[in-house]
Image 1: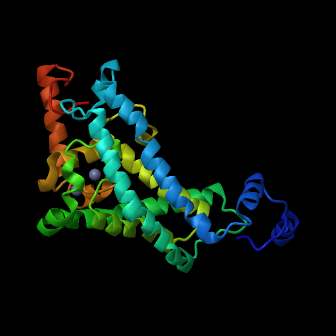
Image 2: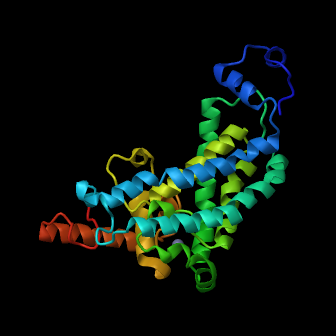
Length: 295
Ligand SMILES: [Zn+2]
Ligand SMILES: [Zn+2]
């Protein structure tokens, strides 16, 4: 809820005219409560979990159209009903855990100082906060994920997420309810340390989930723009973690590669890539008959 009744009042408060984005924000949010604005995240997450993996379903079902060469584990293919079952499981968890978690976590966003007013942050302010959020999340998630690969954490909690040894887009949030709650902490830590505007918070939650869907896609497309992000892990990187499964002591990081590099937990992956390269050189095949795509 904005403390202005009219655009003129907002203009007087800012000492300048509102930008186009600020005018849009005023018109949209002036009469809405902060709680209602925060709860937009529930709708955004529902839309992201539902719509973003859909092109990947098409790709999986239409592999004969030339998509097969991008599949990271070419021997694995899923039917539409298997993918729909995953979506149904994710939606059940969404209704029972993710949605309620959003509803009850509102007071903490107020406490840390996420604001909804004017002026809106600049693009650079938003970008720099998003980079910080990604880095904090990546680092914290690395250690929690590594802990979940201990015997107790894996058997009791993390095993569910690893049911997909060849992940698909819908399986990105597929996990034990306790894992969803625990991994909410790294997502929240960035905004708690460097609180920003509600729009930045929406963007952060949305981008983080889209990134997770991409890394679980099971496809390593050469045209994905995330390839240009320095130290970005991507689908191939996380796919290996799922492929190895419970014994995996490699590729724990959720977004970037540097944590695994610094703490020496990418050795299995690097060795695996080296073997694949060697196999490709020796056989001269394109890798289509191998268990893994060899670049
Ligand atoms: Zn894992
Ligand atoms: Zn995963």
